[in-house]
Figure 1 (cartoon, rainbow, N blue to C red):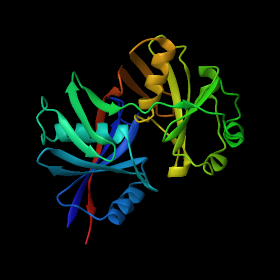
Figure 2 (cartoon, rainbow, N blue to C red; figure 1 turned 120 degrees about the horizontal axis):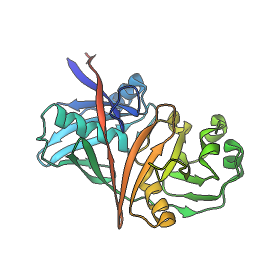
Figure 3 (cartoon, rainbow, N blue to C red; figure 1 turned 180 degrees about the horizontal axis):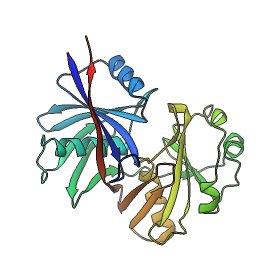
Length: 264
């Protein structure tokens, strides 16, 4: 038995940038242990597993270490594959049934728009371990059900961060978003995302983080449409549109690899 796997770079239109995700379209349901083993074998920030159903697809996301509740870039990669392989018409909405509810995607002018739930933060006193790990004095610290959000003084400081990942890994959270207002005219804000607790020291481009970053910067900048850049080594662009308790995340994607997993 063989299982096809497709690797897609998400939030970019150039190979070898953005955030890579593996997409696995299943013919039948598989056990959790098998999916976790495949994700560990792929060793990407996320591997997406899709199973067709009459009203869309079941979609689950696994990092090399755990199953996660919400992932933007692997959702974008999954929708990209469904349209590219003509499993769904290009003018048809894609519906994913996930642990975070039903997520829908639409394709327009090569941009994939994803309708996600907003996951706003609330202000908190930053733990000493967080400040020590980042070696910065925050302008603001908040926390939602997944991550910490830390605003710092400038884009220059953000790009130069070199966190203590071993200390971050001990903290009871998925990850930490560090953000600053952008000094580049084409972007409103930039960010980086660190998640050693789930096996990813720095995630290249984190769609789900923008479900928090978008509403945060909307309140600060008083605008509902924002252009964001995640300043990892690979880098990637995210368009963000805020609509009440929903966040529309848009990005591009490119397929970089196709292969087969050999199985008993």
